[in-house]
Every structure is written in structure tokens, then in C-alpha cells.
Image (cartoon, rainbow, N blue to C red):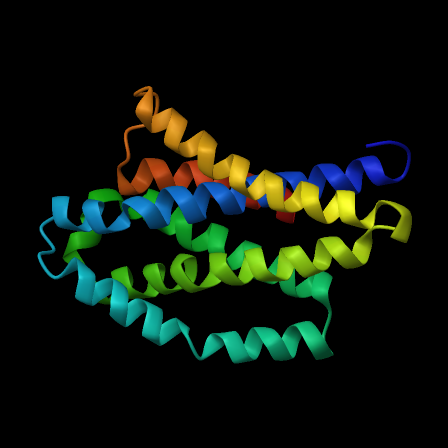
Amino acid sequence: LRGELFWLTAIVGILALGSGLVLFGFNLWIPSNLRKLGYTDADVILRNAALIGFPLNFLIAWMYGFWSSKKTIILLSALTAAALFGFVLAGNAIVQNRALLYLLLVVPIWGISSVVAVLSVYAAEIYPTRVRSRGSGFAAGASKAGGVAIIGLVAFGIAAPSIATVALIGAIPLAIAVV
């Protein structure tokens, strides 16, 4: 947290916190939220969204290896934040457009797992050797802290776990980290 590593650690921390909020918040409550909106086939919708997103993992692996880890993580985070903001804008009206629902679901379901995977490797490569394990451990811990925070917010009734609310809570730190 000192010197030239302060801002780097702050950005990694915000990104990790945001990814934890999405992974353990949005993705945790999406089956219940879809059922509340009347989708009795929520499990099928989520399975299909995951299957649609699966081939994109190969693209991410290629981007990471041949393009840039930094650019890959920025792009993934921006796409995930944009999809989450889409849920915020659509709100409960998402029930009227199944194609839009699938489009918006694919990104956070597939994308956030890719963000977490790339972030763990990115954190290990950006820190100098003398603090590398602390930096990558911080990134891993911050993502889990996001999960604990979102569960705590809901448990204390601060954040009702609706699609729009949970999406907004996860999208904000992702968007900040991208900027």
C-alpha cells in the first residue's frame, strides 16, 4: 500500500471487491430473482446462458495470451459492468424480452468467472517479486470480502436482493475499476 503500488493495489482491490459482489451476490440470487419474475424455468435459462457463454472462455484465453492481460481484464470488467447496468435499466421489465434476458445473463454468468480467473493471474504478474504473494493474496481476499459484504448487506436488510439492486451493487465497483 506504499509508494507506486498504492494506486495499483487500490484498483486491484476495487476490481476484486466488485467481482466478489457479482459472483456471490448477483449470481447467487439470480435463480430466485428469475422465479420471482415468473420464470418457472429459471434453471433452464441459467444453464443455457452458461452454455452460450462457455465458448467465450477460449476467446478470453487467446486474448490473455496474445493480446494483453491488462486489456483483457479491462474489457471483461467493462462488458460485465455494462450487462449489469442493463439489468438496472431493464429492472423487472426484463420479463418481457427473453432474448435480452439471455444476452444480459450470459455476460455476468460467464464474464465474472473469467474476471476472477484473469485477475488472480494479473495480480501475480503486476506486483514486484518481493510483494507478489501479498498482492495476489490481497486480490483473492478482496474478492471474497465482496462476497461477504453482499451477503451481509442482504442479511441486515440494507440491500433487497432484486435483480436491479444486486446488479447495481456489483456494477459500480467494476465500472470504477475500469475507469
